[in-house]
Image (cartoon, rainbow, N blue to C red; front, side, top):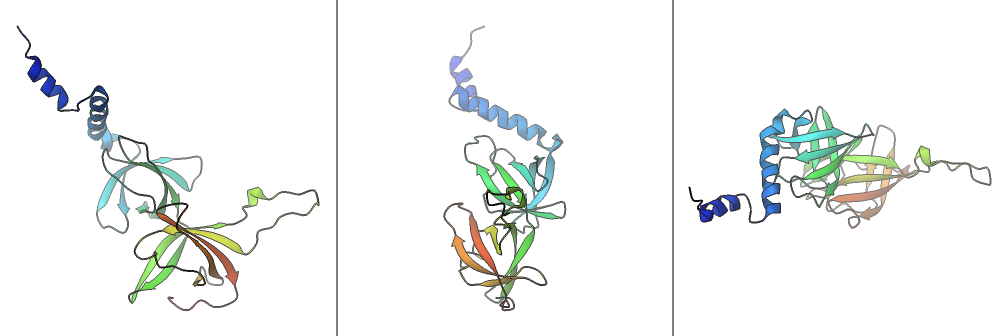
Length: 208
C-alpha cells in the first residue's frame, strides 16, 4: 500500500509546522485532558469576577507565597487579584518565557487600602511589609542593633482605580495607625505600584 505523503504532511501540520510546534501543541492537549485531575487543581476568582477560573496552585517554602499556573494558552497578569479558599492574593511575578501556560507567583494580601473614586468606595487588597525585616536585624560593630523605623512598603495592583494615587495621601491601616505616602513607584515592577509610607500622627480623611 502506497502512502500519500501530502495527506500525511497535512495531518502533521494540523498540530504545527515544525517539530517543536508539534511537541508544544501535543503537550498542551495532554495537559488540558488531565488538567482537572491534577492534585493542584483549584477554581479561583480573578479581579472580583463572579465566574471561577481553573488554575493550578502549588505551595512553596513560604506559607504566604504560592505558584499559580493557568490552563494552556490562558493568560493572567502581574497585578491581578486572586481570591481562593477565603483568602486574597496578589500576583507579584510572571514567568515571561513559558510557551505552554502562564506561570506566576502569588503572595497573600495582608491589608486593604480604601479608595474613594467617582463617589464609589473601593477596597484594594495590598501587601504591607516593614522596610526593615526582623531577620535582617544584626548587631553591628558599634554593638547597636538596627531597629525597624516608622516606614513601610505597600504593593498594590496598578489599575484604573489605583492609577491616580499620589504622594501625601494618608491611609488608616488599622484602628490606630495612619500612614502617609512618601513615594510612588510605577516603573520597576510593571503591573504593580510600590508605595513607600511613613507613620504620621495626622488623621486620615475619611474615605479619601
